Image (cartoon, rainbow, N blue to C red; front, side):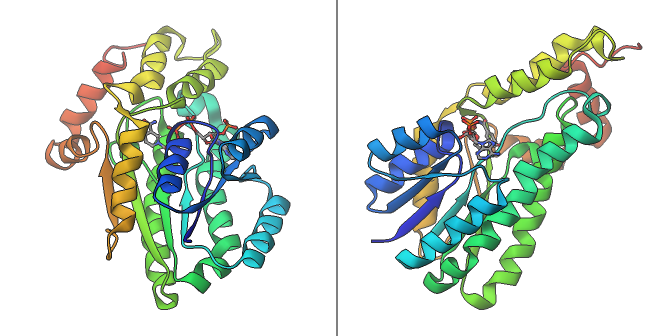
Length: 273
Ligand code: NAP
C-alpha cells in the first residue's frame, strides 16, 4: 500500500487531501498540531500524527517512525497560514513567524523525511499559492512566503532528481477552507489606531477575505490534485481552483503599473493619507 504524509490536516485542503488519498488506497499519515484534531483523524482511519511543523524534535521522531515502517511515497507540505496586514505594521517578527511556518518548516519537514522518500523514490508536493505569483497589498509577508515556496520547489526538484525523488509545486486559487478566518484573525492582531494604515482598515479586512472569492470546494481541489499525483509523469506545476489560471495570466500580461493601480483601488489605497 503506498504511503502519503500530509501536514496540516485539521481542516481545509489538508483534511480533504487526506480523505481522497485514503479513498484512493493510500495509507495516509495525517498530521495536526492539536491533540483533539489528531484524535479525530485517528478515529477517521488515518495514522494521526501530532506535529507542529516548527517543532524540530517532533520532526526527528516522525522521521524515525516513518523509516521504521518502510518508505514514503508522497509528502504533501500543506500546513500554512496567511499573515495579513501592512508589512511595516507586522515588521520583522510577523515576517519571521510567517516564514518559519510557510517556508523554513517546509524545508525542515522535507529534510526529515528525505531518507524515507529516497527509499521509495517518492514525490514531494509543495502547496504554494497564486498569491506567490500575483502580489497584493496587505499580504506582503504571505505573498513573499509563497513566492519563496515556488523558488524552493524549483531548487529541490533539481537537487532531488538524482535520487529519483520528484517535486511538484501547486498554486491553488481560491479554495473554500478556514484560511480566510485565520487570515482575518491575523489581520485583526495588527489593526490598531496607532497604525498609519488605520484609515484603511476595511481594505486590510477585504484582503484577508479575498482568498474566498467564489471558492472551489476543498474536495474538488483535492480530487484534482490526486489525479495530478497519480500521473505516470507528475507535472512540475499544478494550478487548481478559482483564479489559479486567470490571476497568473493577468500578472504576466498587464503592465505592472496598471495591475498595481487596480489592486490599490480594490484595497482602498487609491488616495493620499
Ligand atoms: P486552513 O483550513 O486554515 O488549514 C491550514 C492548516 O495548516 C491547518 O491544519 C492548520 O492547523 C495548519 N497549520 C498552520 N500552522 C501550522 C503549524 N505551525 N504546524 C502545523 N500545522 C499548521 O487553510 P487551507 O486553505 O486548507 O490552507 C492549507 C494550505 O493551502 C496553506 O499552505 C495555504 O497557504 C494554502 N493555500 C490556501 C488557499 C485558499 O484559498 N484556501 C489558496 C492558496 C494556498 P491548525 O488547525 O492547528 O491551525
